[in-house]
Image (cartoon, rainbow, N blue to C red; front, side, top):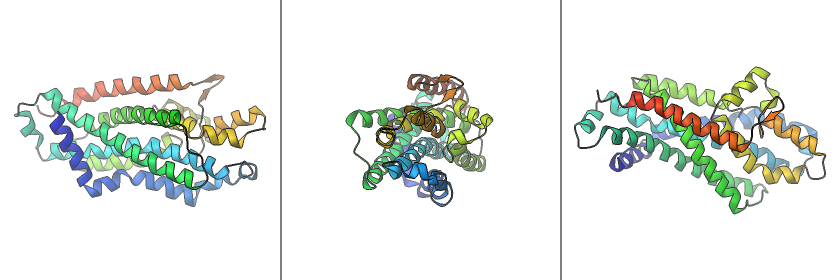
Length: 285
């Protein structure tokens, strides 16, 4: 499995067009936000808050990190689709490699790529936040971000793996990649604050497992900027801001805790991995 894992990772980073496509959703978010969606933060009351720009970009950075895990994992599975369409995988199945090892090689390579790309995005976004006046986060916060990245890649890879296991051609894969890259931002509440959307859409976002990674990222990245911005302001205003911006998810009077979000992510990963394994392990039959 280790050999296949290395091979898949090398192929992903050598395929520049596929690499760019997997990052396209992130570019779309930045462009849309810069040109159109950033106006939501034009409220004079928000602009008057200390560290307004850092707070605003921290919210955007959390969304980018959440989307990155999904789109880069999808791009990583292009290797599997290529092997299937060109019948390359048949050579693996007549080799001494176990079928479970071959399946694991594809899955773990996608997971590893998701982690690598998310870590790179986190570093670049962190540098920009500091450049616009943000403070360097503490060690605990960085460890929390790393933990959320691992959870995000785990959940996203599982979901994407299941989708890819249902596809049978490169054209279907490319279509699914385009749709997913466009749709995932809406399903995570990245383009507009969750609290400004219709209640039905809010519920969809809150029930969509990967959107919980966006919430967890926001809680870590925005914690210090929110404390600084709302210092001396009544707590109810901070609570309203957090709910509107998707920093917390509420179902009526019930608030989803980080532990619940972790359970949702791990549980969804187990379910989707189980379903996708049943499909992927048949590719050699």
